[in-house]
Image (cartoon, rainbow, N blue to C red; front, side, top):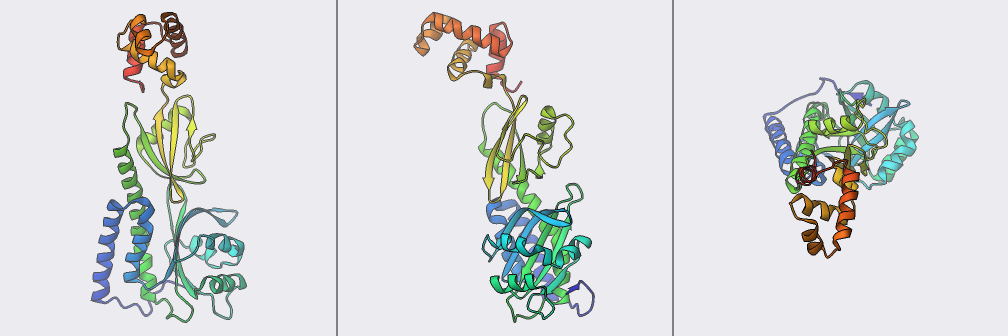
Length: 329
């Protein structure tokens, strides 16, 4: 086990060119690829610079000095690798090292005689020998972005150059991931339509916000004025929420959630038939014209109009027209 040091580091001109190309590729992937494809393609680019055949890229928070996984992407490993690791995480000696020294790389050989039994089992079970790990801490959310690269048993060990390359690349990987979140939100925005104002964010299954538009935070504060983040306030959920002032809609992307926040419209209080009546009434149609359009009796239309006035808290046609044409206020 060792951390990054300067012994044996030799950066060649070829490595510098590859490093530069990797940075350019990360920027391109961040702005061109969908969120569900970004991590795999980014790690494939990293393989050009550092040899490895498996990887685990995720985010976590320390709870009782042990990392609680918030989001995880495994590369060349089965999804149950995470649960296998959780079962032996108290034996993973890299946890304290990388969280105690964010930004530094550490290597462990699971086949070494002094390797913890749990790590030795994990390596044997999933076909790797040495692995290299690093953590990057987010100053705002205190989430740790971690990346572990794995080599098969018997493969050459990670060199000081490998450790330095990962150490200097990790902030760029995290920045590219954040940029990809933003790109995903921009793409999502282009698919949405309608009169409602809306704002977007990316969160994980625990409700921790990873990326947000500023207006998303503003909308949350309308519902919860004392909220400070970065976790969604209760009773909001990554799966959605309908409240007094806002509504959250959710779309699952890999193990993350793309949230759309909209101002809650008073029109949501109306039934489907009342909405039809209110829309036509707001357009200037008379009771009799609405009755003919919808196949209703005029008295039924009058009953719906009284109910609409009561539910919306208004008392004239102009107010209804304003709400039906500008539902977000």
